[in-house]
Length: 284
Image (cartoon, rainbow, N blue to C red; front, top):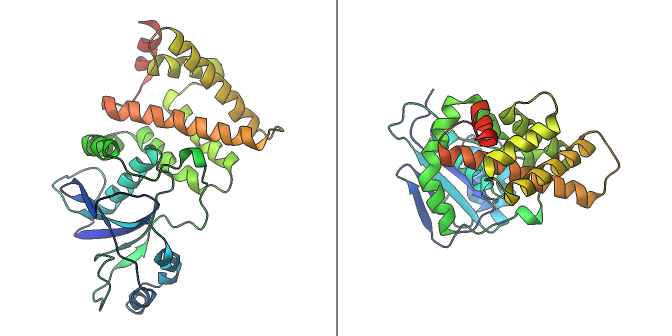
């Protein structure tokens, strides 16, 4: 079912210089003015019962809206989920503080006298895992150019391949886990889903991914050792071994970065990785 019309998704956690950036003809990010609590309460009187949960965002900086409208696509993500995909692609580029809060059928810059209001919460979470090494807040031109170029490829891959769709869902959702250990576990579940090995997991997974991402030589050897070490940390964390907090955070950063590399590889090559890709990378 395709959602009709234009929707405005309230977001926070990234910064861009321009007041408005058109990413695609049907997808724009736009700065919004400070939201009035009284205007927000007005939405509540019109049926938005969860308005009070949005109130904290009235006092924050770097608040924006994603404007998502209909286009001619007959497959892939609909209007609201395209906004989710945009949010996720920013996370993929290390903008892990981005947060899509609530949706509205009119601009968050225009809340006075609301009529015929349709509103709801998006991925609203009270707590979100935040690590300084992954908190790039500023949107650069390279981010915008990359998303413009690859957004529809990501949309199409998600439509065609369940494993790819699962991978980008994890790219977004690990931030909402109850703790870092749980986040590491679901990230590696996505990585293992892509590689799909069941025996000699550490060696074969490390060999397959390093061969795919790096050419023959020292770079591949270093990548192999890095992934092998990461998987070792993952195992210690998941199985409850005594491990320092700094090592747990290192494991999360490295695991997220590895999954992100795989997802970017698939997007930029416009294909879902399969066994043949890994075999070719290893043996040819």
